[in-house]
Amino acid sequence: MSVAGSEPAGAPDRAGGPGSRPSPPEPRATGESPSPHVAGPATRRALRAAFAATLALEAVTVLFVPRAIAQTGPGLTAARLAVLLSLAVQRTRVGLGAGTALQLALIGTGTLTAAMYALGGIFAIVWGYLLRLRRRLLAGG
Image 1 (cartoon, rainbow, N blue to C red):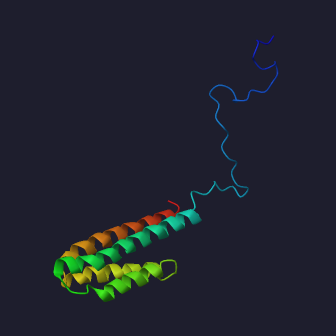
Image 2: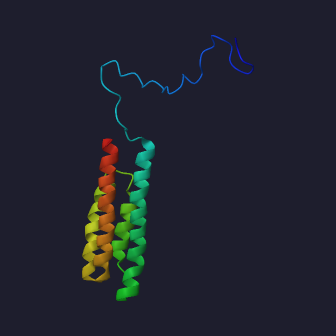
Image 3: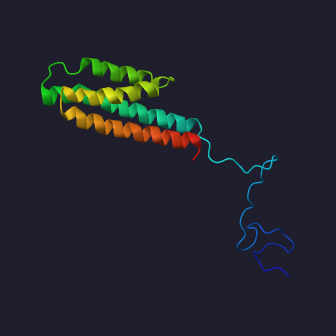
């Protein structure tokens, strides 16, 4: 006998019963468990954007800090061009290598302006963290 508003007798239970959970996905035919997270194109784009944003902030730093603190006239023109070039090649294979080399060069500009030691060190730490994060995300762990 059915109560008004309830499902007819013999109708399947939509919720799967009290306390039931959806069944786990079936393992692959080869007997392997489903693979862990594999970085997709969105993850790669986000990482490239993080590296590019770091280099853009470095470009602004190299543009203004030497002029304001050390009064070096036109600033670090070669370093500024190197940052912009590295920013332009971020999508290529040499982009990460160029950016990493640039971190060392930026720390080296501390010989001209002592404040650049600290700023170069901060950017190198951020760059190192991004490299570590990239390795972890692309490795799937």
